[in-house]
Amino acid sequence: MSTEVMGVLGFVLALAVLVVLVCKGMHLAYCAVITVLIITVTNGMPLMETLSNYWGMVGGIASMFLPIFLFGAIFAKVYTNCGAASSLTSAFMDLLCRKAKNPETEQKITIIAIAIVPVVLGYGGLDQFAMLFLLMPIFMKAMERVNIPRKFLPAFMMMGLCICCVGAGAPQQNNFLPTTLAGVSGTAALIPSIIGQIVIGVSGVTYLIRAVKKANANGENFSWGKLRPVQQPDGKQPNPILSLVPLVCVCLLYNLTSIGLSYSMLLGAVITIVLFFPYFNMEETKFKSIVASLNQGVHDAAMPILCLPAFGIGSVIAAAPGCQTLTALLEKIPGPPLVSCTLMLVLLVAVCADPKAGITVGMPIALDIYPQLGVSTAAIARIGAFSMGVLDSLPIAAGIPMVMNMCDLDFMEGYKPCFWTSVVCTGLGTLVVMIVLILFPGLAV
Image (tube, rainbow, N blue to C red; front, side, top):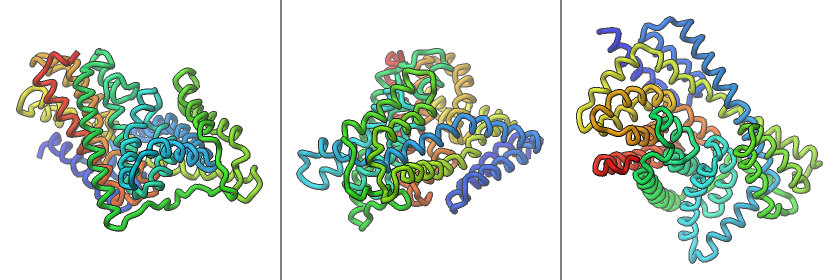
């Protein structure tokens, strides 16, 4: 067997082992290292040099994400424990569901609203990682009110992020990375993009409404697990309008200043403590209550931080000799040019276990081949954006176990709904975008 073939088979073996180990309940941190070792050995790469480069990449990623996770978790915890999340959610739900005739209708309205909120915030410029921390306590309060089992929380969060991040004009990595590599506008192929986003949203919401109804019929109900917020002894909560202020401040600080996302959320936590100091009343002194919230935030941050080693797998795959062989094989996929282009990009994102690594490898190849076959660069860029959101939610993707840990869910318990909303529905949206661009190539502008 040739070295090149062995390298490609090594990718398959390594990622299969990763999936099995994670599904068996093993932690992603050491499973990621095992995956890297398999890739290194099967591709004949120098072991110590590869490991050194891998940990260097993980260190670089950690320096970027550790403060985001730390301050994001702290902000989420103080915002929840002071009652602001509960107050804002209750007022929002009262407004949305004031005309709901029965609990089933209220539940449907909630599901639709939860799908829309991340899209609005994402287009408003809020980073996808920030949304995970900011929206989780709000979503959970809404889910508690209408009795949606907690296992659907990752599905809700990932669906909203998928709808937003792949769309034309979105200030998110999934949009600006492929459009920048292609040298086209961030709004390239606007109409096909909107159609694809609608398909993702409608199919995702339809699935969730049916799945939640079935879960309730089977006796499944909402539970907080270990994420239950502190109950205020006197039942008092902040004013719901005032509860918006920290969220708005984080968005404004992030988009209008140069302090970055992590310090925007840190200041958001400070603003929350100052505004809602009287509501930190957990049957202790207010100082002890605030310290307890801060410490809980640090504890919550540890879960996603320990998943960071998995974010370096893509860099090892991209540097492996088997990656070139795999790319050459994917280039030869038969069919219409845009079909083979889509399949190539989607599969590279999956194999690299990282959308950024996959699209960084695949886009230059696609831009070298497919314009000569009559495919516009704008179409390639939009397909690239959607491709980043299809198979980036497989069990091998670092973000999925991280989200499961944040939601205090067993992997097998929470993954099925997440798979449907972020893989199946996003894949359906990508398919529709591809078909629209094939039938109406003039829309790729």
